[in-house]
Length: 195
Image (cartoon, rainbow, N blue to C red; front, side):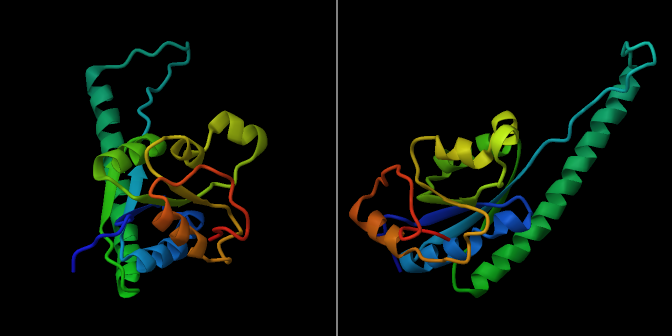
């Protein structure tokens, strides 16, 4: 069957947490309404490569020590990617069982940048993601992946706040997307889309 929908592919970035998985019910509902595919993405943050400091505060390291540190970080990254693959495979099977096609991808890098780059290179029609729930000073200092993704022009983003996922309704979203391919940026209320 050929798809002629405005929205063919929905990206759901997952970090393995329960919080990020709360975006799935809303994404599944939207995918069913639009006959869309859900693409799961997990971004593995690279392991930091740190050098051990000497008691005097200087760091003089032999090349063999550097090699051990780098290899150790690579091994840790491979382990994180393996765990992410298992997690995404399980989520993908669950979504496929609900009747929605669901491939998954893993990338290595900083989450916001990788999500934005993936959306641009893979022509995603919609991103459905949760916020981390950070607020105040912590949010100002650390930033928010969702904040950074929302501010990137070129693709619509549906952000789900923690604790609001029980109110699943994408009726208003489907009406907006059908009537306006380029969704306006506006603050949504409870009567709009709350997943």
